[in-house]
Image (tube, rainbow, N blue to C red; front, side):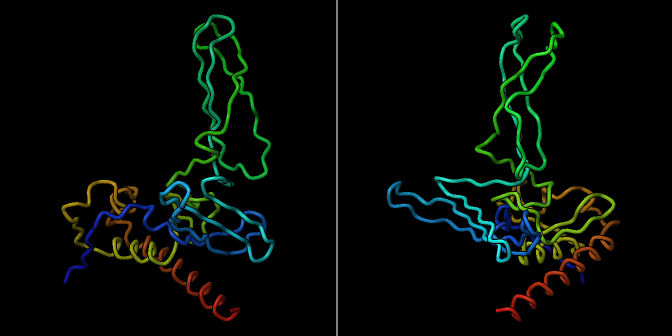
Length: 225
């Protein structure tokens, strides 16, 4: 009987709740607590998250007033060339931003006159830039606990539910979608090398390794509680 997987349309962010991460300061494993909270003053639900390291007490918060971010970001800016007036655009990716003194100016060579200009820049998107290709959590950019290298890059998961869904999809020889699944679901956005049947055995071994790692973490947490 063929192993079957049905894609119901859940996006990657659906699995990002309660991500298991490593502290950026001391590498201790912990969990990001996140949920929608109703704010009376604004009469709407707001996505809120927090992370507190049990070892070094590093505290990160995300809400309407504060948005801590320790992962990658972009420095963006634009201005006219001071020599010829051509519009210049700066967009520099910073992979690791924690405790980094980021520049406020980037040197850009004008494509028209060739002269070098100092372009003022600022961190993009309220100090955040989440990239699903990286093994980081979506709220703070913390490195994920469940990640393992392979010859194509990294295989990673936010938590148990994400890992279980990946196992189900990779093992399936019959992959189907519901009528409302669309093309933005977590399985549909996986890289082609993860969808390829010829890589199934290798990926399964990596996912099994992550499950063993997660089980050890769970058992340790239970014994310490």
